[in-house]
Structure formats: structure tokens, C-alpha cells
Length: 138
Image (cartoon, rainbow, N blue to C red; front, side):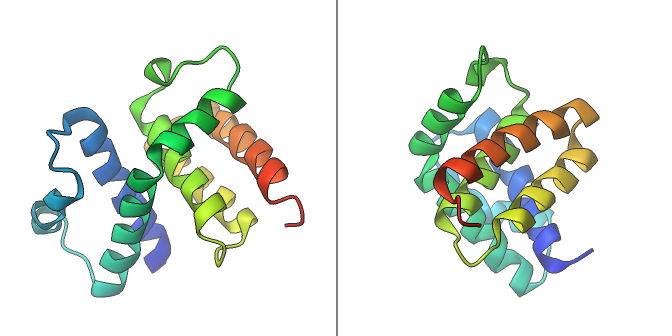
């Protein structure tokens, strides 16, 4: 597995934890996370970029999820799917060095590992609609 894929998987795990048990400490709990999930420095750097960026832009990201999903509230979504979407949208909109197709493909691979086949289709549809709306030239 590539370093960036590993980073995306670890970022999903940390975002999942924060989504369920955020006591206000947020990303300050990364040290504890790394104790439980040791990783190479390059993996940690990209993971932390994904987590911090996703959290920093979470309100805008959540607004976009609400806008691009029909008849779905964030609370009804599986926690894993919600955080894969958040992370993918962060990459699409605030990580221009990552090609959109790579971002979407990586989100789908993470979804296949941590969620369901149906979730992969749902995530693909939402991320692709956002890509077309905000990065149409890609």
C-alpha cells in the first residue's frame, strides 16, 4: 500500500474518532493517536494535513454535503461515509496538487475497505458532482 493511501486510511480513522468522541481537544489528540497507530514520518505528515484541513473547513464541507445530497441529513449518514466524504471534499477543494480523479479513486478504495459497496457508489456520485461543480476543467 502506498504512503498516501495509508495516510488517507489513518486520517479517516482519526476523523471517525473525532466525529464520535470529540471532547473539544480535536487535533491536539494526534499524539495519542500516533501512539496507538505508529507510522512513518511521511505518512504522518500527510495524515495530519488531511485531518487539520478537513477539520478547519468542516463547516463549509458539511454545507456542501447537505447541498449535494438529496434527502440525506449528515446525522443519517454512516459515520465512515460522512468522514470519507469530508476528507475527499477537502482534497478536491483545498489540495489542488492532488488530481481530482486520484482523490475520488482513493476515496472509493478507502470506502471499499471500511464501508460497503453501496457506500462506494454514493460517495462516488457526491464527489463527482462536487468535482464537476468546483473543478470542471479537471
